[in-house]
Structure formats: C-alpha cells, structure tokens
Length: 175
Image (cartoon, rainbow, N blue to C red):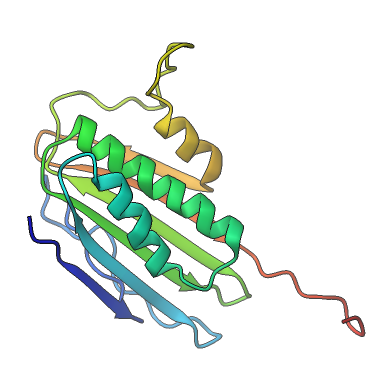
C-alpha cells in the first residue's frame, strides 16, 4: 500500500465527511501573533501498523512542542487509528492541525476518518470489562483531550479531538 502525506503551512487541510461530501474543517485566517496553522494529512495503512504510523506522523506534525503535549497527542493519534482499524473500513486518513493561539500557546486537532462501519456510535465510550485487553481507547481520548467527538455512519466515520496548551509567561523581572 502506498502512503500519501501532505503538509501545508497556514492553510488547514480539508478532510471530507464521506456521508455528506462536505468539508469538516475550513481554512482559517492567520492568528494575530502571525502564527497560523500547519496541517499534516496522511493515509494510514489498514492494519495493525495504523497505530505506529499515526504516532510517527503526529510526532512529525508536532516536532518541537513540549514533551507532555507530544506524548498525549501521540497516544491519542494511536488510539484513534486503532479504533478506526478495528471498527471501521478502509481508507484510513489522519489529519493533524497545529495552530498557534493569538494569546500564546498551541492548539492541536487530531482527526482520523475511515470508510465507515455498520455499528451505531455511542454518545460516550462503553465501559470495557475489567479484565479486557482492549476497549479503553476512547476513555483515554476523553481523559486527555480538551474536546472530542465521534461520528459514525455506513459510509464514513470521523473521530476528532482537540488539545490546547497555554504558554505560561514568567513574571516580570524573573529569569
């Protein structure tokens, strides 16, 4: 399988909802601090390697960010990719948007889409059995993300989340 990755600075990519054909994210103007948005979009393999490829792609998209944000984002990307592979159909696509906030800080949106599934989406993640070896992915996403959603349909599934980090300014006169 051939993988396609594209990145764009200051022009978010468009990930299409397969049910409607409409854009999920639209281009946004540059932020007041001149930051803007960097977007990475990549196809994920439909198989167990989806999680590994997602982790690596998130690391590329967030190169240079603080370690805790990078760790959280890599874990979320891995969990969303795993859910797409185990519950959905090909193709799997990962989109990572990195935005500099106008007031300082960083906002990261991670989206994984797949070719759809026939199961109904839960409004909240179902509780896994205590001894189960899987089934905790959306709980992890819910715990780490500032916002998240899951939209399922027969022709497309979209899992999305946002992580926000505010840069803390040091008090005046201290180093």
